Length: 243
Image (cartoon, rainbow, N blue to C red; front, side, top):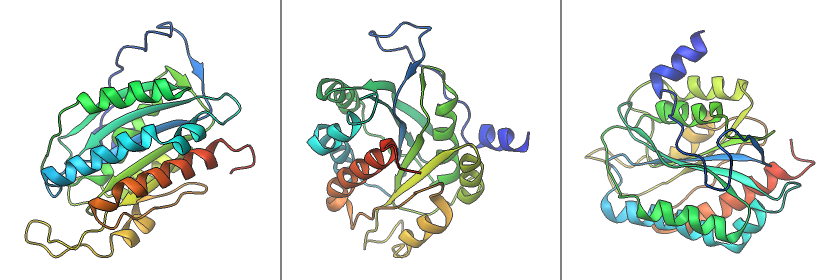
C-alpha cells in the first residue's frame, strides 16, 4: 500500500490516450521492450538548450543504429512513450505508447514529438518524474518482459519525494532505470553548476539489472549521448542473453 501511495502522490497514474489506428482498442500487443523516455523540462533548461534536447531525440529516432536496435529483437518491435517532467505539479505524456516496428513508425512518432510545443516549468522533481514514468507500465495496450525508463536531466531532485525511494520501488516492480545526466559548466539560477550530477544519477536515480548512465557534456553533446544511449539500452534489453 505504501508503494502505491507514494507513486500516486509523486506522479499519478497517466491517462491512456487513444490506441494507434492499426491496433484494436482491446488488443494487447507483445513487444520486445517497453521504453519510457522521461525528459526534464525544468526552467534551468533555457529555450536554446530545450531545442537542442528535443532535436537530439528527433535525430535519435531517425538514426539507423537506433532503428535497427528497435527492430532487431525476436518480435522485431518495441513500444515507446515520451513524457516530460519538472516539479511535482508537472508531468505530461507528450507522445503516448506507440508501436515501433520500422523506420516509418519511428518517423511518425518523431513527427508527433516535433509538433509538441516546448515548455519550461519550475522545480526539478526527479522522484515525481520517475513515478509518473513508472505508472505508464500499468497501461494495458502493450506487454513485454523488459521495461525501461530512460530519464535525462540537468539537476538533482529539489522538489517532491527523494528519487532513490521511488527508484527502489520501481526496481522492485522489475523496471530498469537508465540515466542521462547533462553536465553543464553554467550556473543554475545563481547556484554553482552541479559538476557531480553523474555521481548523483549513479547513486540515486538509476537501478535494476544492467542499468547504466551516459553523460552528456553540455546540451551540444546531448544528441550524441542520446543516440548512443538508446542504441545501447535497446540492444541490451532485447538480446536473449541480457539480464
